[in-house]
Length: 391
Image: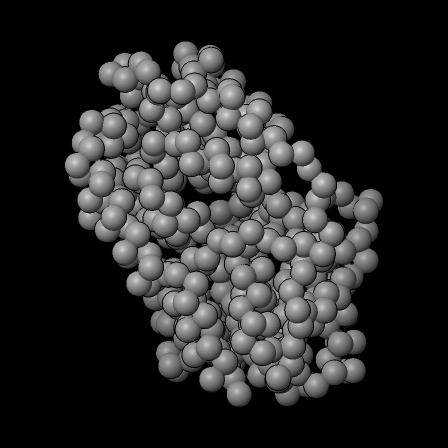
């Protein structure tokens, strides 16, 4: 069985590629699918047996590909479409697996080449246009909405990554039996063909984390939707009661780190918060082992954050905001939920620090929950069910 996977991303790069693209490709290959992975020129090749990476030109003058919709990505997607036509003309694929907006390319090409199509839907593309402030044009948003609905109708299989997105997609599908909810729930280290040379900086960072103090940690991107202002404000409130608490912030570009470090200083947290910037996965994981509290402070949204599953499996208590992005997975039995305001979030973090027995119960329940629904074995089972529909 041979498949064409189209990933309109700089695959693989730390800031530009959703890890879900890597894990989908990895598990497809492990289940015996020979994969041609078509992606942008930027990025690094992954080391997965049975996967051939095909790249469009890099176009270095365009700079780094930004996260979210952009004119740069629109241009690159036109080039991606030309490369897809060339591959489809030369190869016979059992199916084409289209990530995000590449499904629009496949919507046009499917009748011409007669392939089966999987739409890997990580978000509503019309909603992305407004979420990333790309446009407020009703005409353009309406066009994307009609295209998205058309893709959901003609796809032979549709993958969504969260219950809320599943409901959204199924309302627009004529046959919900073609829908598969496959959460981004595994988090193994990415294997690159040419591993990045880097010093083991974990020890240096660990020395900057004070011993014997409760550590509150956040790890992930520093985009505005992550709610990091809320976390910093809440941590400042927490320190009124627990002045020994220390904040660890992992991730972010240099400009983002500088901005949030300035915000922390404005809240009187100079010397009480450590910002590391983006770190290699092994280093980040070692630092997170030092944490007493993991956090997910988003204020809004419906798509479940990828990091949530790693947090459930971490053996650490998780404090998260009580919003749909979290509550479609989290409950009070497996996490500490708080309303998305600084005082409530601070109170939840304080409860973690003061309730040792409940913490043990919540952490144990979270691990059982993750193992039963989202583990590597469960993930592979869901992908295998998808393949049964396509072949």
